[in-house]
Length: 231
Image (tube, rainbow, N blue to C red; front, side):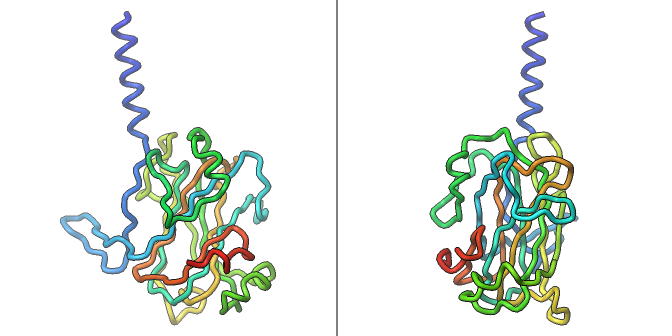
């Protein structure tokens, strides 16, 4: 009997470990190739990472279409041929921020919390009429935001601890003939929430990739901090 119980526990442990998240390199659509039926992508040249944490019961930045939305503002200093956005929750074990990453105070204070996570749902929007980084603080809150793309679940992303592939990824190719899809210099924001009924809570990693270098990119959860966070 003891052997059967032990065997059962080992099988359970193996099953749970199979759901451990491991994030691969973020590859671009640009120059994508198919080799023996498998898509091969060159990793983005420029990758900006934001480590965040939403405390259970936190007040969202906005309630939009019945969803509690949170925003990460991004200043993109040059026109880009493609932009990729992906989000994973919780932050995979073993992934630690570097001095090049943006890290929220809440993440630092709750880095040990691996139990709370959420079904990510992300959007990428651009603010109309903001062409200078110095204008962000004054104009962001009243700007009109144009939705460029959105994503709920991506099969490319690792499964969450629950075993479900509820993490998000999207790649947008700039379309200069369509103003709403043209990835010009300006202020963008990554909006995120949870698709299903429930709270946005726990740690997350949001990444923005580009196939070209973005000198002077800036990330902040408050528009007024964009200038100070410029790198």
